[in-house]
Length: 151
Image 1 (tube, one colour):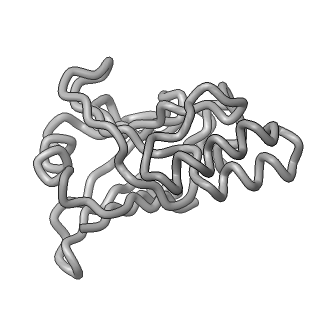
Image 2 (spheres, rainbow, N blue to C red):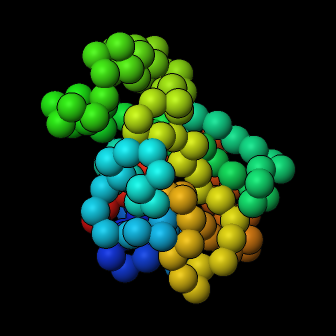
């Protein structure tokens, strides 16, 4: 099963092969243009991520944590001088081992798909869905292979 988030359209699709199970409006980070580059920038990441955490009672209700930063995020940040070599290595090791990457680096972390209003962009970089839409996603959470976030 695949989740695709189209940031420009503010839409999330849940697909089972070619079959669409959910087509939902989403809200993004308060600075929605461009990929997340550092902690506190208010941007939603862009790339391919996996669900690495599930919270039934998160700050905003049902929440699925993504493994941001991924390897590409780490390599880009390292090449731009934003990320230290030690932080880069720690992120790459976590991704390689299937663990949640460190969330305390210069890139930030704790990016979730979670419940919340979708009428404006307001998150710190997360993707918010209406509770009914999040319930559909939550019910299929263990079947989701990847979450692709596109510009």
